[in-house]
Length: 342
Image (cartoon, rainbow, N blue to C red; front, side, top):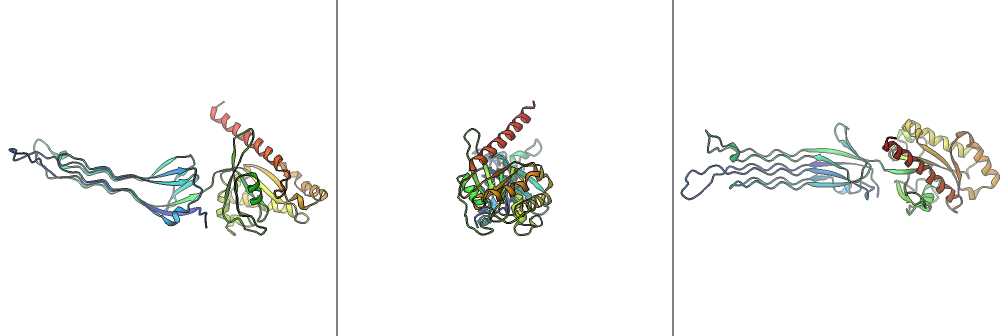
């Protein structure tokens, strides 16, 4: 399986190096002063958000991450070298939690965002630090502090501009492959897509966007039916939700399919209903104009943008692209306005 969206892993920062007890040994100076150096600090463990990663597959094979311990101090006032840090690259959209309490430490949503998952122990002090006017030859040094260690859970919520949602076999994989450079597995049976797929849609006059094909939802998904919770998690961070509806089914089924999707979104997280939604009626190549008009009529009361397409044949895709470009540009303009404070 190429996609894993939750993993448990262990981090251990380096221990601090021990301080050194040492005295100067110079010719003709029988009682040289203390010159024991300090131990080096242990290395830290850092998590770094990487825009080029979109899976936690590496955590299946490597779940323990340790930084290097600091080196002990030496005589002649030589301080020990600090331990090397350990850097762990994780996908954008990773939520880091404590494995025992479930407390969220950080949400890594910015490229190259850094989180210190475990801090290295401080180095111990050498005996040179303890010399005083009354104790010129201290035989005291302190050990290095142990580095932090803990078990963490990493939970991935994909970051995408547009989320494709629909019941199994609505045609999402076909649509994603036509809109972007993605090449998802496509076959005419439910649950072909068992993991989210990402694609990039390029526009002529505005910045490109990321599209996520969220695996087919089923009734009861918000309760974990099928793989509901894993799938719905990835919808949380999409700003536009594209409902893909199969118009080739009988009677009122297309509208009932839409209602199933809307109910599952609301039951999982009501604020998802506040996102921008659009309805895309797919497989128009399989119905006549009269049937298409009947289906369109079913959706007129929703007050949502509606586009009719055939992902298989390419009909209506340019209209869909223009609508997505317009919606995204408006959203980006609102964000720019909010950031400017005007």
